Amino acid sequence: MRAVLIYTTAEGQNMGDNAINNHVEKNMSQTIISIQGLDKTYSNGFSALKDVSLEVAEGEILALLGPNGAGKTTLIGSICGLVSPSSGVVEVGGFDIHKNARKARSMIGLVPQEIALEIFSTVWDTVRFSRGLFGCKADDAYIETLLKSLSLWDKKDNTIVSLSGGMKRRVMIAKALSHQPKVLFLDEPTAGVDVALRKDMWEVVDKLRKTGVTIILTTHYIEEAEEMADRIAVIRKGEILLVEEKEALLQRFGQKQVHLHLTAELTQMPSALEESDLELSADKKTITYTYDVMSKRTGITSLIAELAKNNVHIRDIDTRKSSLEEVFLSLVEEQKS
Amino acid sequence: MNKTAIKAIYRSEMKRFFRTIAQSMFSPVLSTVLYFVVFGAAIGSRIESVEGIAYGAFIVPGLVMLAVLQQSISNAAFGIYFPKFTGTIYELFSAPINFVEIIIGYVGAAATKSLIVAAVILITATFFVDIKIAHPLWAFAFLVLTALSFSLLGFIIGIWAKNFEQLQIIPMLVVTPLVFLGGAFYSANMLPGIWQIVVKFNPVLYLISGFRWSFFNVADVPVMISLIAISLFLFICIAIIGWIFKTGWRLRE
Ligand SMILES: Nc1ncnc2c1ncn2[C@@H]1O[C@H](COP(=O)(O)OP(=O)(O)OP(=O)(O)O)[C@@H](O)[C@H]1O
Ligand SMILES: [Mg+2]
Image (cartoon, rainbow over all chains, first blue to last red; front, side, top):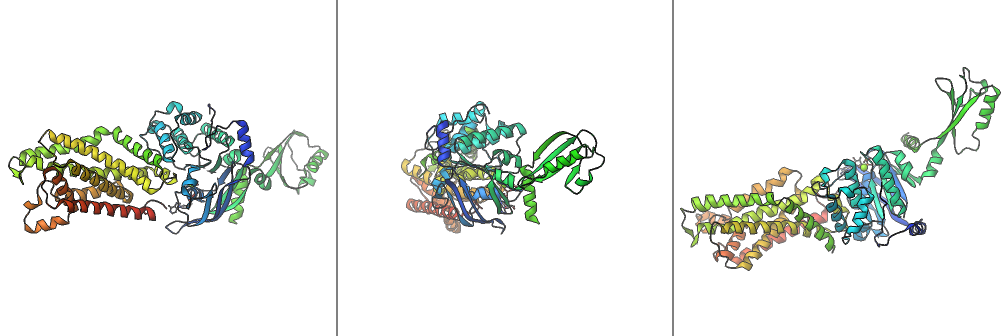
């Protein structure tokens, strides 16, 4: 993204770098969304959310991670007013979403999973319309900045029908940000978006993060959660399996691998090492050792010592942390069994 | 009251109307012209006058009402069905607005559109016949009340409809026959015995009668009864809509 996003909160002040830092620091632990005992049973009897409780801190980016049909969209819909929850309490910025719907909703911007736009309207009109719908005075200067920051400015007079899919998705984001919400929901912001544009989207999210907007996003791409989120909630079959800081999650479930690249083929594994968890590659030139990051003794020293004793020469070493993808899969598998 | 939101909805609806103004106007004006040619000139030349009014002029109020009814229903039905169909309705649900505001925006726009069409048809009619409106204020009041209540009806149909067929079935199967049987092209007094009673059950008769009275001072039913009937209809529509929004029927999961 080329232009810099200058984002202002609903109160209207322009936030410079310092202001941003203060803002983030001040509110670091302040809860902006609080969900308690949320249940949703659809009219066909299907129970899509089961006793979901979750707190989101102001300024953080939370990724909702889960397989198809896990209930991510239902959860977002329940908070944003698209789905009527069967029971439970949801508060946004301290306002109950039913008793104080107007105030709660003014704080929220929503980008739904499916692109839905009035195709014969222009970009400019549709974004202005959204701002009006949220009860905000027209502010063409702000909308100009917004469109520029999303690389949509040169398309402002185009009708929606003449835009590409990725541009349409950005128009959806522009609409969601048109009223300067404090909380932004992105339901699969990068579905059907090519790699370059996905990177663009990450940048947009990153810029928004710097302005102190709280973001809740859903994704199937684990690398995306890894890239963007501060915290990750894993949801499956309507239940939240866990919510944790991304780093902690990676640590807790993370495994590390060390690859030892040998100078010559290893025909026979040294007898002292035969018992251990080593893997020899097909070309017999790489040994892979997998170990747990959290364990006190990883056993790397003795492994290398043993190899040296047997005159196995190491040309190179590299290590690799398991990605969130693997963490996620192992977690979901674990729950299944 | 989120007035900004009402304005936003109203404006975007009107914008769509003016974007397709040619299509929006062409069909009602064309059918009015056809009615004049067929009923006014061809048949009208054989009917001298109805209750002392030249037949060509006599049918004008009915033609205007026919257009207002059809336009109100289809504009409002389409106005709310379209966001449902394309999915853009998500924005209405997530915005800090209540249903009263949504209705004012959509129904207000739909009623405005049909009033514009009514005006254009009246102007078209002056090319064919001489018309004088005896009670212009009453005429306007009847038009506005009719446009509003049938836009509300259209709004209900738009929410109820699950597909385009359903969207069109009520205007076609119910409204058009009611207008034709409601005395658009004749006076109820011209009907044979029993039918005079049957047509009294047709709500549209009261509209056309009242509207015609405001033009020519002649009516099938007393004008006050017409006013009560249309107000009652308006009230029923508001009650149904109130219930829909309270229960979220066909709107929200
Ligand atoms: N209107 C509905 N009526 C009945 N069941 C529904 C309805 N909407 C969703 N569901 C069911 O609720 C469950 C959760 O759906 P939801 O859309 O929240 O999943 P998701 O996590 O967003 O999935 P995806 O990753 O595919 O978008 C699914 O099993 C789905 O079939
Ligand atoms: Mg989903």
